[in-house]
Amino acid sequence: MIVDIFHILDFLPCPTPQKWIEEACKPENLPLILTDHANNELKAAQSAMAIMSRYRTGTFVRGNGRCEQQKGGLQLRIEDQLSLLNKMSRLAREELRHYEQVLAIMARRDIPYVYLEAGRYAGQLSAAIRTFEPFRLVDTLVMGAFIEARSCERFAALSPWLDDELKKFYRSLLKSESRHFQDYLALAEAINGGSVADRVAIFAGIEQDAIESPDKLFRFHSGVPV
Image (cartoon, rainbow, N blue to C red; front, side, top):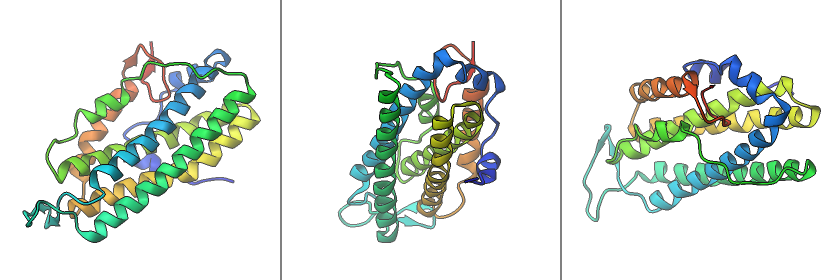
């Protein structure tokens, strides 16, 4: 099955550098790639559940792009709140299923699940998240869109160079990762009350630097290997 990810490639500020692909395809790095992939799937599920927990009762209402004070606090519009909770719930379940699939592949290959220091990627992006609502949530969702889009792009970039099992598995992830990207972006726009192009541009600059600059720690979302 061929999945069209041209919209992902158009969204991302740059393609994965060839040097990263070459490093990822080295047989000795496969255990690291799979272990970090498992970590990323778990973190994605945890992030979605954290959003559900924080906003499950709503914290603000959007009105023409502004936060409007309501009796009892700030509240999300009901339609935005329910859409957010439903999409994050579905995303968390899918990410946990992917996590289980990666663990099964590691078990079949006798790859131990060991501790890996986190890379810089998510930390660099999260530093741009604004600290006041509703913009904290908007930026969190924009960041999620970039993480899902980059994961999708890297699955597609890696799959031609992997063995048949991993090639089939990574290609099978493209559809869901592409949908997750679209869900995050659509939610950000709905809660923002319109386009988030200005925030996308800011996160794109940070993301491009994280992907294209030298990186001493090789990970699934790392930059150019040193």
